[in-house]
Image (tube, rainbow, N blue to C red; front, side):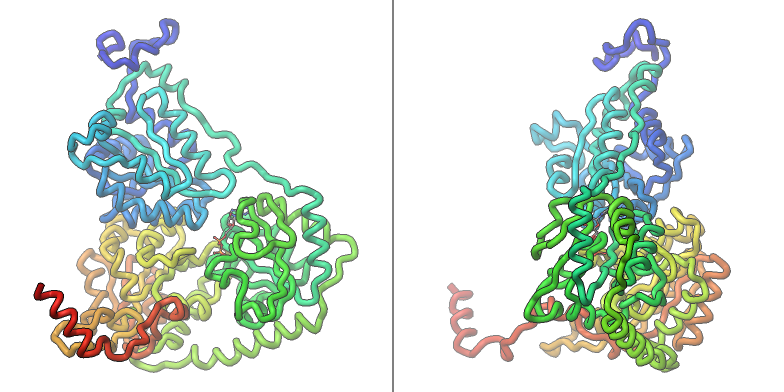
Length: 599
Ligand code: ADP
Ligand code: MG
């Protein structure tokens, strides 16, 4: 078809001098726009109206990974954003597929990771008149409150700008999730191919350096200088920024003890002399000045107040963040330092260069002693060889494998499995620990493991609670299909928190928190051609995981954990309300309800 033959109104925009008579279409323009902006991988699930788009993306050199459920594809895209500092892209079908992808988009936004969810949609004319199209939904309106920005492209000549807006919105300032709505008909729209090529936009410098104001740097240094018991808290914003050398220089020049948040573990190796990881309670309670480095004072840090921060509350905060509105979100920030991580840290380190005084030795000694004592106390429990395994025994085996293979990408989710692994398994390199993030989402595991393998090419070890694994377990087929070097270890304790709960009514149904007893998750992996191992003690677990990392073969190890070993909600039991009413209702109350029911 030539321009002259086409009835599409878009074609009217073709100017006489450049028209070649050759046409391009929405499919190709979208693919070219993504490639122009260095998007290399698409995580998604095919279907109407984007089936052909996926095929063509693959044909045009993008890597297209098809998942079994959009939420897992979305979680893959979200963590790809964290790992690469480029937007991870998830592609879904309309309404239900879009909604399935939305949880991950909200998760990416909450975690400040760049991601773009591209979903096919019904035509606007039909949606807006609510005429009942196949999978009809006003997706743009629904996405808006759940992400950083949402855009819809209606015309082929706007694809270049639309993709550019999505890329820049995801990466600039505080990164986040962006929704891009692609009505099915857009893909089939045609325009002159030269005009089309000209309409594409490459995003220049999407996350420019943001230099902190000199006055703000001086104020921060003043506060730090006045400290008797200073503490640095490293967050995943620092890990995301890939300013690893600036982080190291700042911490080491300052001589201040640091506490890594979960996904900041490994920015400096966990056995670094200044690490206060194993003295967490002490440093939070006792420190008088805390420097927040890409971390937020949210629930994970008790909102910067209350008992865990020591009473009476007198901690002064310095906070480095790219998002000005993060300051004072929970408590007063004495010295806000707004800017990008590298520029802020470099400015502080330079400011410390002349005549910097290390923090009082009394403090650094106290932190070190507490840390060493806690590490020494934990060491023997990590060596226990009990069968069925307890958490320390199993995680001791995992820890030894990771110590030996420090490049391993470590994925972790669950309740007890998450909490214990966070404190027991050391990280040695930046951005190796990938977990449930700010929300504590269960179900990120397999999507995260797949993206970790795809984006880094390194072996992946995913340590999963049996419940957490269940949310994304079907993706082991995806792992086998793409032959990814992923070893999944399911900590199988027959249930959520513990596998020992009983039905309190005494009926036949199991309690809500327990699963099939002695399930064999390893056999699921065998169904798809991967390696399955049933491990009943730490030695077997150690051997299986070592072999899996060595061979790179998709592997699932069913690690048998004592069903009585875990505790309710892991370390955050206080957030799970429990009833204080011993017997549910008096006889009198039940009578009233019975009478109401009979009315
Ligand atoms: P953690 O859970 O590890 O405490 P959070 O996700 O709560 O970490 O906090 C990360 C913070 O880092 C966010 O407030 C975010 O705005 C900030 N951030 C992200 N990227 C950068 C960057 N390049 N420079 C500075 N701050 C950043
Ligand atoms: Mg469990």
